[in-house]
Length: 113
Image 1 (spheres, rainbow, N blue to C red):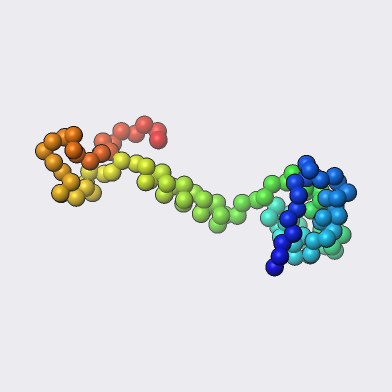
Image 2 (cartoon, one colour):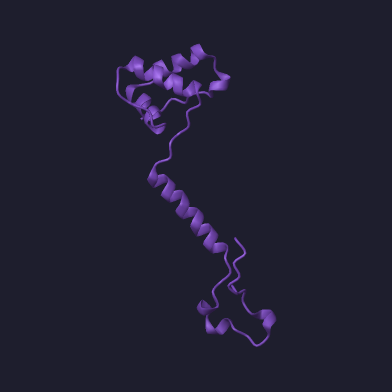
């Protein structure tokens, strides 16, 4: 399905913005409204009016629970990668007598990172 790109409200006068919404299909209007947590019931004119009002009021897209969970999982994985390694999980061949060659360790300091 081809999606028409809607210009930013700040660069479009209200009449053109309303016309842009009028040109959208019912499915596109419903998608636009549902992403913002707004009602998707009613006739096309009602949906156009609701979408236009949402655009004028800069109603933000509501993040779904699944999308939020995915974002948090990615952020958590990135933070885990940046932590020093646990010494209990370092291979035997990585340990040396010379401390300067020892791998970086987490000594259990909680510095709020």
